[in-house]
Length: 227
Image 1 (cartoon, rainbow, N blue to C red):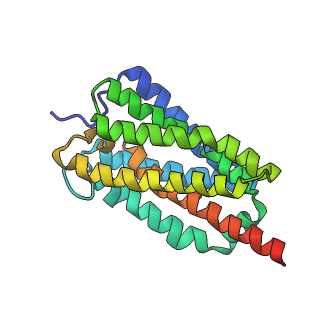
Image 2 (cartoon, one colour):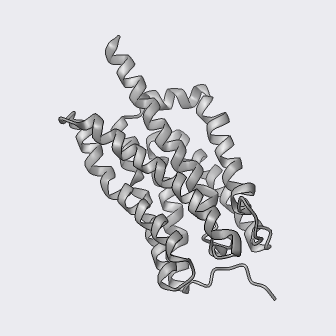
């Protein structure tokens, strides 16, 4: 009988689940207390939906794009970019949130270390795991220094911000391409079963949205200065 739970060691799974949920809570922090739990609740329900599909084997099928993206990642992207980003509430939130805090929340991408853990246990191919893990970790490590430069308006801060933000976006875009090339033969099964299916369900859409919103915030800031 097929099992749709990760073959990773139990300790890794038990650390991953609460840490992932905490990271989701952390990225809601700029929204303020009133909206924070609503956003967290939405993501929790979305992950529960994805988990139900994964645990029933719905996502464990070879396809292009992967079913985890078709059933969860792409719909979330449509919700964020097509609906949430255009609401009056979000526009107000974007205006009130500092650019510094929007950059710093990307520290949550240190979760990419779990790709390397799965690689160490030979549960992911090296090409994918290194791409995913190192790209996330590099983006996370530089989030605080870039945020500090932006906050202090240090010389070259805008160049640093553009370089960091574009790197963060391209990391996800490149990763999706690598996933498509690598996963056709079932090599990425861990990304289709519980709990690591949360990565494709949550990360690409949310990370791209957060990076694009940084560019939107920068444009708002420059417009306000010109006026």
